[in-house]
Picture 1 (tube, rainbow, N blue to C red):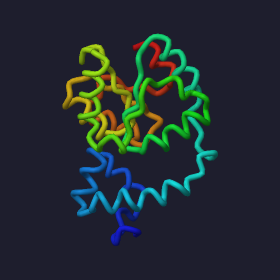
Picture 2: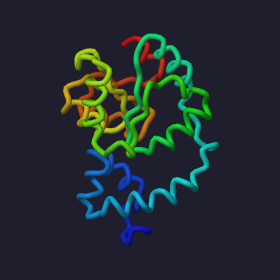
Picture 3: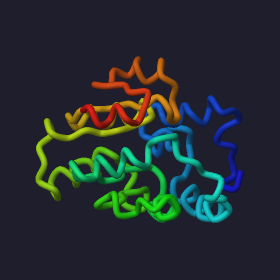
Picture 4: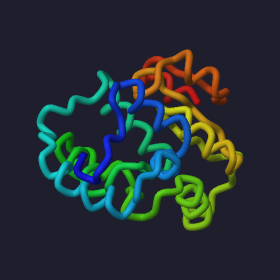
Length: 176
């Protein structure tokens, strides 16, 4: 309500924002992104990161993946927020870079940036994601999508978006 309008009333309303690019969905709802970003600073400052728990087994899998692959976080969240989480779980050296909302709102643009910066081919790139919006943006760029069933959107919704892979356990990432 800090921006003069209620954005969502239910969890379903909130999750619907992630059926496409989160920020584009906000704009379609008539939200002024400048006001939203300004209001979110205050909200993010009140998050208790000690209550965030990773999905079981994901941390060792990330460390194993890091030995084999270059990894970058591309997120709708702010990079500082992500840094607090990676630091808390002692995985801040796992990712080469964190591209959050402070680096732009389009995940497609961030993916293109990574492809160019790291000199990787689209056919060798996987986007691990947990929303249908992520799947759509990665597919628009032409990279493979790996949907994980333990995130924001449930398995059926993810499958309907047509990911290249859907996994239910972090260990399955090691088989790709």
